[in-house]
Image (cartoon, rainbow, N blue to C red; front, side, top):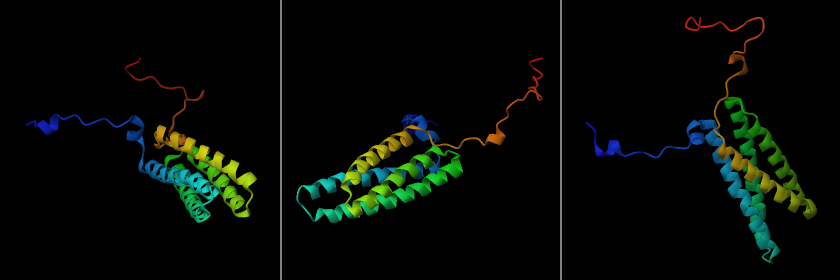
Length: 163
């Protein structure tokens, strides 16, 4: 028996969302939190530079949060590399987190000549990575030894139907 609830069409998920595995979703979640945290940093810095010197504490707390989430993202990217055999999220995350770490210590040292431009580049790189991770399906790649590649010594055999 068909009811009205059975005939209601459910919206189809996008192809990328449908094929992404749990490890991919974890990376997406951590990366999303990372982007939210890092976008707040220029706001706190701007409020500080406008004369509210108490907001420097907010900027420092935000830097601690961004750095911590960045290291969590490295762990999530390693899981994606191991489970899904995709190394590009790890390499891009490693580059962003290395830049964030240099930027963190440049801010502590008061080296604004390095801290500000590196901060802008880090935000741009993280937003580009965010877009890339959400556009691609993060699914498991086949193991290279499982792919059968015919060689000259072992030509492919024709099926019985093909003969």
